[in-house]
Amino acid sequence: MASSTPGDGMSETQTAKKTENQVDESELLTVPDGWKEPTFTREDNPRGLLEESSFATLFPKYREAYLKECWPLVEKALGEANIKASLDLIEGSITVCTTKKTFDPYAIMRARDLIKLLARSVPFEQAVRILQDDMACDIIKIGTLVRNRERFVKRRQRLIGPKGSTLKALELLTNCYVMVQGNTVSALGPYGGLKEVRKVVMDTMKNIHPIYNIKTLMIKRELSKDPDLRVQSWERFLPKFRHKNLTKRREPKKKSVKKEYTPFPPQQPESKVDKELTTGEFFLRESVKKRKKMEEIKVKQAEALTKKQEERNKAFIPPKEKPLMKKSTKAPTEGKLDIDAIKEKVKKAKTKKLGAPAVSPAPPAGSAANKKKKKNNKS
Image (cartoon, rainbow, N blue to C red; front, side, top):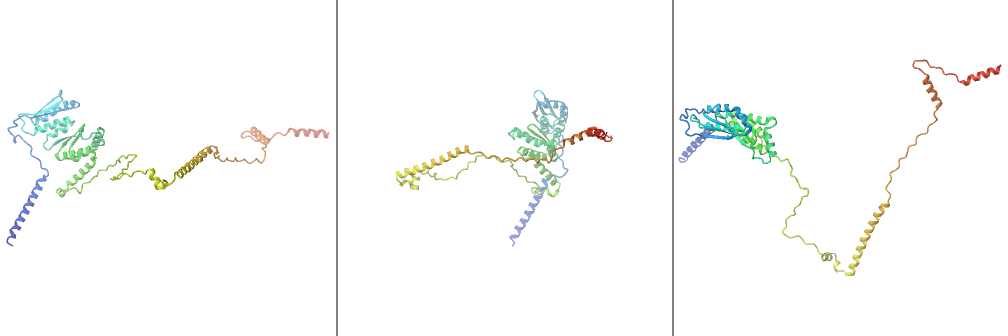
């Protein structure tokens, strides 16, 4: 019992130390809110730099006019950090170098990034932010990631989005300024945001739509607000997207079916003698064989004759006529039309006037002649 007690005490002390170490490490990993790194002043390096260092970069021809315009502002911004800048329009280059007054050794690196961003079409208002301590930049080369030029242009446009909406969403989620120009993507912002921007750009060039990465960034942003979830894993909350290849592979019209492999050679075809042996004709006499052949020939000839005769007779067979439609006979009229009555109606219509009384018809000429005859007879 005495030997077992010290061992138990040692194990308890070791576990307690381990837990303390784990707590300390987790506390070190988390940066307190509102903490900022103290600025580097002349008091930190009063003697300055020992050697002069310089950087130079080339810029395209179309940036010449803009750089001429904003060059006084660039010199003023770099002059505050005691760095000398020179613009060579003949060679098309910008050079930055340290001076005797320069005390910050990292200021020349920031000046180098500034001229790189200006050469890559980033406006001066955004590029000046690189001189701040909490800012960094990343120039991503995308020109060699896709071989086909048309495909490269489509994927680059997908990164920008309709009216720059995708790029704007990426900037809001990562707190970075992103500029797509030619074969490069320039990003400017905090270190964490630059890491996310690089991942989104590389995935877009690998044919992964940026909306998937933007969705995960939105979820991460909401999860980071909860202090309890900072230590936990976020894999259960993040969506998992699977790659679906919707385009069907083109299949050939004539498919060649491969036969199963067999080590044995194919069976040889039967010869004429083998066929005669199987049917029994081999053992017959020659006269019987000839008779059989003649009968087969006669049967074939008879079949050929009948076929030829049928083809000849087809020309003499009359085609089927369509049945004639019987014309429907009209019913005879019951009586003839009264032409005299129609003539009288037409005359009455001519003599009639609108709004006038009907005119009495004139007495026929035959009635007057009859009256005269009667008077003569009386007399």
